[in-house]
Image (cartoon, rainbow, N blue to C red; front, side):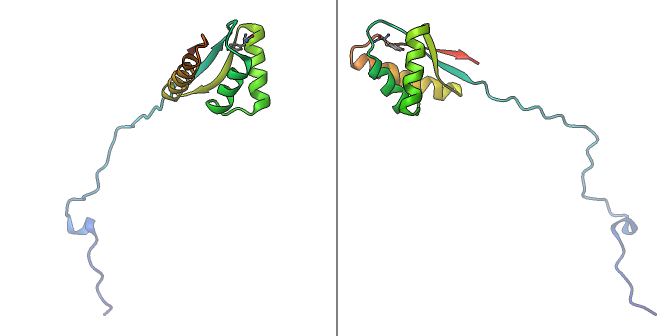
Length: 113
Ligand code: TYC
């Protein structure tokens, strides 16, 4: 006679502790919206100041910053960067504060992508 194996859960008729869910759970994830920080042209904010904002706050290289600044100067507006709302707002506020501290009229707007 061989050794007896312990009864399985089914054989003991004990209730299973496993929970069976019938429902299909649908998970939908919304990608967070992205916001464009748009620089507007004006006649008196100095070109070098705009370039310095683009480098220091928007982390562009000096070459890219100059291209963006010239695009704004020539077309009237241009995108400094695209971010979540909170980051876009913080960068717009900081840029505007620096401009006002220097007495420049630079205008910035946020636009949903
Ligand atoms: N038009 C400005 C000048 O000639 C330069 C400038 C560029 C101003 C971009 C604002 O967002 C701006 N000094």
